[in-house]
Length: 181
Ligand code: HQG
Image (cartoon, rainbow, N blue to C red; front, side, top):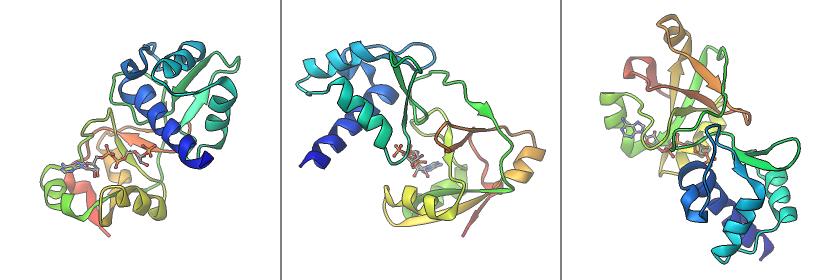
């Protein structure tokens, strides 16, 4: 179906723009931007029939707003979620008193022992609301949500960023700031 084809294209786009630009034979600049023409050509070389209209439609309809195109339409990047070291010019933002982290139940012992680590990504990802955190957790298994005491973290010097698409990002979180909900 059209939807399935688009979903697969979007998953590959995430891989290329966040983790492995090489998979499409392209590079990203220091701010995470890919050249749109190069990217489309790179996709086509891997046998993926991407064109400009489809790319624009993926950006416009992505349910999480994962991607952003430059004003002039020549560049594209992912808003967050990178594992490769790019500077997407995140805005330092004062968080609400509490944020949430959705994870799988089986990770809890390790998280409560070591705190939240960014694992393969550049930042720990937090959600602004409980429901979103449940969805994030479900990607990994039986979901469980931790509340994160951002007020106390801020007092202790932690810094928070909010990506263009509303995801909260921070550095590793010690377990003393976490509570299982
Ligand atoms: C867990 C999706 C054991 C952590 C989402 C998570 C998000 C630990 C997993 C974005 C740990 C990493 C990111 C520790 C953390 N011991 N496990 N000490 N510390 N973990 O996918 O936050 O759809 O890298 O709890 O919506 O799940 O891709 O991070 O379960 O915004 O756009 O290690 O990805 O967005 O998993 O998700 P991930 P995440 P997209």
